[in-house]
Amino acid sequence: MGELYPDRNPYHLQNLAKMHKRCSCCRQTYEPETGFYYGAMYASYALSVAIVMPLMAVLHFVFHLEVIIMFSIIGGLVLVMYPLIFRWSRNLWLNIFVPYDPEKRRAVLSGEMK
Image (cartoon, rainbow, N blue to C red; front, side, top):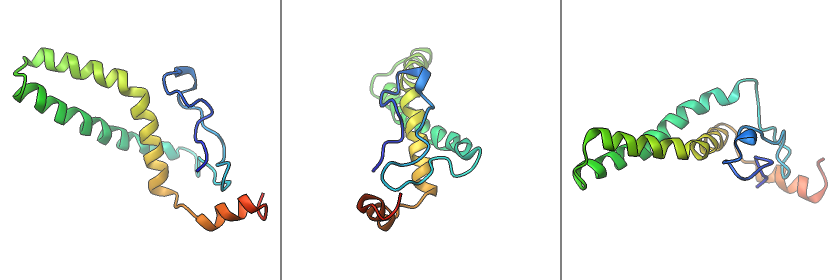
């Protein structure tokens, strides 16, 4: 599988959204159409909810924290995790809508396709 991002560290915020143009293995373009990643916002929301809801339940039912303390902890965590969630949602969105073609990858690796 090819690398999606030139800078692997999502916490280098100046490079957060920079992606390679094409996959180095199969030459698939990483932006099939203009605005393709707008839909990744929905995936980002779903990932955030999947992180926040169980954490909120644990903080409330296990540790019996007050609401303001819970929201502070969760808000801080989501803020710290934002670069990871951003990239995970792009990866997820791309994997949902761009099918993997092993034959194309073999052709590129064997030199039949440039």
